[in-house]
Length: 409
Image: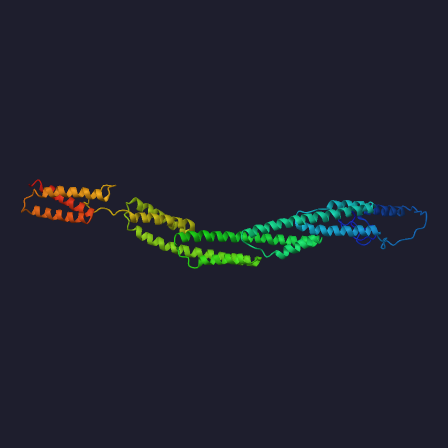
């Protein structure tokens, strides 16, 4: 395509359908240049150009005015291009580019009426499809808003939705597209911010619940989260208020990450002192020390959830160690497992009667007889008080004493 108009010699953009000065169709520019070149070649060869009839000489800078149809075609074409620029904001929407190209070719070939018909048809299709797309996107926006409200957040976008519906119903499609694009952007920002805030709240709740299960003191941190939740439910949220709530939630989470490790450090220190008193060769003590080491590692690496789980296991292990029976004294008898108190008492009474019978066989005035009688009375008194372990120990000592004295007798 030539870079200048063959009529007025003004520059013509490659995408223009007409010359901006004289209105000459760019599709005919090549033919115009050919005719001018032919005229110039004839003069150069000395050939006379014979005109059949005198015609008025028109200045090349004063092109004929466009017809009414051409003006209308140009106006409709400009309107379509403007609307196409607006519709492109929707991303995927109606497109009449092919109709614009077809109309330009028809006009360049002199079929102006046909070009106008093509543009009118394209104009109607663009308006109808634009309205259809806007209504569909508006319905989707309402669904997205409903989803957000079901999760506990109310958006301050009521006026925008009302304006959008009014623009669609009034046929103001350009205004509807503009409001739709802006509202979609705001709803997307709300969804992203709300998702981030929900993630922070979930982390806070998880840490708070685990800390409460371990009776970790948190002070006023728990109530601060409820305060944020109440304020979210009470009013419609803007982008600024949602960002503010996210900052407050992040501050609460930071306070939890400061309070929980301090409390766990103190508990692990107390547990370490308690485990120092447990014998090294005790299997339950070794397991408790392993759990203590694991909890310390989690805490140093900032894994609070894992650290609290280990502290919970450590508490159970230490409680089991504290409930274990004390080790028997050297030489102390061990009571049979599974024997109840009445059975043990009956057995020890029989043992005491048997030993008393043996004591009566000892010489009356001997030291052995006196010591044995003292032991029998002490064992009887312990049995009366149901102090079975001490009674069994006393009777065992008496039995050992009589056994060592038997060979002498």
